[in-house]
Image (cartoon, rainbow, N blue to C red; front, side, top):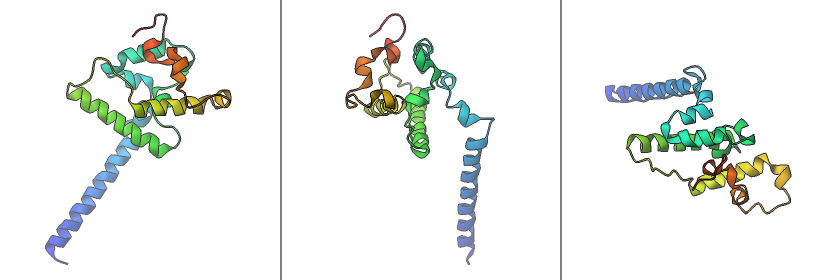
Length: 153
């Protein structure tokens, strides 16, 4: 085996070892990093989501749920973490690029995820109703901007 091939193999093995180390650090690293990143307080740590956190905090029954319970797919773990990564990186990029809109709106994918999670959590209650209609069409106060004593735009 030539020196170039050995060097290439070493680089590949080193890159693989670094990838494994980073993966282990993220999964097991700073005490409960993964668990902490699933809490509402973590989501609210970015000032972009402070108003959403306040609305959630004062909204009643769903206050016992974390942001990820509604806003991330929860059908299977790989899909959950893939979308957690996508949404988290999108938030980081928009924030650091100074491109965060004043009025944050949920995406169409986000609406679908929330709808599936509503049905998943309230499965027994909604089995006899039209599940194609968005739950938030009737339950407007569940949406962050419409919770609390006064409904806002």
